[in-house]
Each structure stands twice: as C-alpha cells, then as structure tokens.
Image (tube, rainbow, N blue to C red; front, side):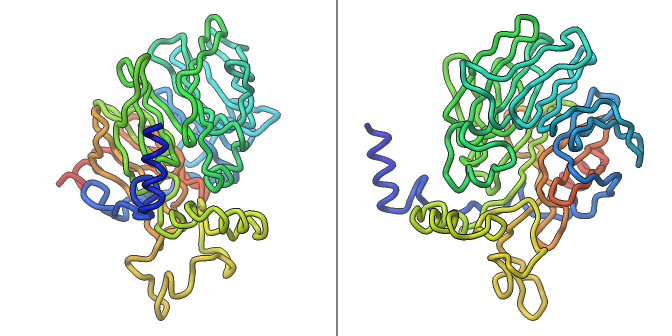
Length: 365
C-alpha cells in the first residue's frame, strides 16, 4: 500500500521513478575514447556473447561457438539454433543458451544436461549464464517472460518487469528461481554468498541472497548488461546502451508510446539502439546531434559503448567509452584473459582487445 501510494505521488510530481532526469557521465564514469581507439582483433556477422576458461577466449557467433586464435577463429561447436548466451565451466565443459529458450551443457562431467523451464514456466529470453559458487551449479538470467531475446526493445518500451534469475543444479537437474519480477535481468555473477544481477531497465546491479536483496550500484546513466570477474578481485560490467532524457520521457508517456509502437516501424522508434547513424529516418539527427556538420559535445546518444570496472564492493573504479561519434557501440560482453580485456561491441560486430595493465595506468594516473 505504501509503495503504491509513493509511486502515485512520484508520478504526479515527476520525481523518483517518474523523473525524466538522467545521471551524467562523471567521476569514474567520465567519458573517454578508450573503447573507440581500442584495437579490433576480429569481426563477425552475428556475435552474441564471450566466455573464457582463463586460457582462451570463446565467442558465440550465430549458431557456432568459436575459439579466438589471434586474428583467426576456430570452430569449437555448432548448433541448430542461435546461441544467446555462453559460459565456460570449470570442468572443461560449455553451457549455452539456444534461442533464449533452451539451456544445454556440452562436454565435461555434465555433458548432455538440458533445461527448458524453471518452476513450471518456460524460458523465454535467456541472455546470460555464469558458473555458480561451486562446480555443480549454473546461474542463468531470463530477461523477460513476455518478449523473446531479440525483442528486448519491446520489453523496454512495454516497461517489462518479468525477468528472472535461476539456479540450475548440474548434478540433479533441479532448477530453483532465485529472484523474479525484475525489470529485465541481463547478466549475473556470484559474489561471496550473494548473486549479483544486472537489472537493466532499473539501471542498477542487485545483490540477492537467501533472505534479502540490496542495490549494489544504482542510478547508472546506462542500461547494464553482463558481468564477469576481473583478475585481482572486482568485476567487469558492460552497458549495452546509454540513457537519454528523451527516451525517459517517452517511457512515461503511455498513450504516446503505445501509439508509436502501433504505428511506427520499430527501427525508427524513439528508443535506444545497439548502433545508430545509418539512415536519415532515425528520430534523433540533424540539429539534435550536429550543427554545421560538427557533432555537439552534449549530443544525446541513441547508441553508446561502455564498460565499467567495479571493485569487489561494487563501486565504479574506472570506465571505458565509445562516445556518440564512435562506432564501437552496443557492448554486451567483456572478459579478462591472460592480462587482456576482450570486449564485444555487438552494434558493429567487432571484438576489441585492450591491455589491462595499460588501462590501469591510463585511467588511474
């Protein structure tokens, strides 16, 4: 009752969840060009996720799992459906999600294990898989039960809150719902006795345990996605799109938003994208972005590239950016392997590689 009353007052006064303000990129999130200028080591036509076993880096590209070998790639496995999430298991196996609806294990001690549902509800949009606190569990995020994986923008525009975090027992096959009712769960990792999960549409990282949940970091100026461990402690957090005041306004104008979704081609909605600047039909262009051919430094981003280095406590330590005028946008995965950070910019289909030691020197100097 109190929560409902608070939400109603916020809507009337335009504050709290109803505010259209967006936090600035400042402090540890101050923009730079580190992602935009990073070396490109490979380019793919349908990349979705990255994973590492500490020695090699694997990429899910379309229906294939590939191992990166310098500028080349070697096929490791192939499936009959699109891969939407990938995880290297400690025993040498692989866990994959197919079309967001099917989680399978290949290789290792639990080869052949497969799940299609949890707590009687089918998977709809599985977008990330992580190894649990031991070798016998997996943590899976199912972004939405209303929209499939590829229709994430529909879930945002519909203000979806049906995401789930699920624990899968590799030995018994039993599944357990860790949390549900999330505003698009997209990425998770184990931190001590908690599960950290990205709640994209709420712009925060949640820590969930058996008895409670808390916000690790909130009010992010972007929509967070997958998490992965960093060497020496802490985590790498990717953000696949940045927030803008215009989109925040549209999200709160229900009648306008529904008419837009009903009458306009989804490519031209006032909504974030993984890449932009490819057509004159886009809603944000012209004087919104440029004046006399020069990009405004305060231009609102329709697409963006961002990786945030988090401490063990979840505080931002530094960040890597591809700004409005860049092309390495739609960052959905980042993994560290042998002192190098590999970043997947899905918007342009490229894999970037950065030296972690050099990043530390440059960002923390």
